[in-house]
Length: 276
Image 1 (cartoon, one colour):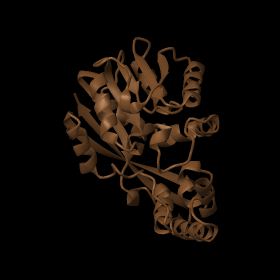
Image 2: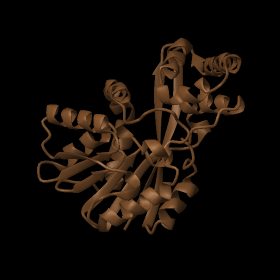
Image 3: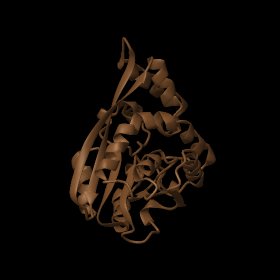
Image 4: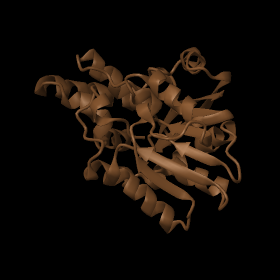
């Protein structure tokens, strides 16, 4: 789910670096378990089936690429695109290790997909669309390369209050004066729906998908957030005093989620889908 590094004005992270790619790779199994049901629904809504040609935009290390490749089978094809060579190398290696010979990778900017018009049956994008400064431009590029009657599906975060794992840390960062990350810019169903419609899609629908994260204690979730280079980045932009105060406030709010069985953190994705 890597966007153009020059587009991430909110972040100083080098998304094309080997370090970031390796970090993403280490979390692949955990993400697949957490996001598996939502990924499968995204593929259902995009009508990905045996024999389909699928484009995966901002594919990152290819978590959803593998789901799609297994579904389309040996007579189908999945092309994973991203601006990170390192992440695509991991995606290709993971596909090869899984015995999948129907996966290709290409380094490409999502806003200007260098592909033939109407050359794919479906286009998918998992947790990438909201990170671009101009999501509509990306959707229009997807609209061009999908065939008439084909579908484009994008999975994004819903509202901040529905996603406290990300929402708490980003809200605290904002209140302490750090520029927020754009995780929730498409988090209202009507906003996501209208963005698809404005880009020429019809039969547009938006589906919500709930998920849960479990941690044994507040310390566990707190450590997880601190290890996330992406989520902790707005906190690290603060001065030393503000940074310490912000982490204390984040920990205080996380503690309110703790129960007798640890910390159960709800979350919600939205999946937008439209037909060309």
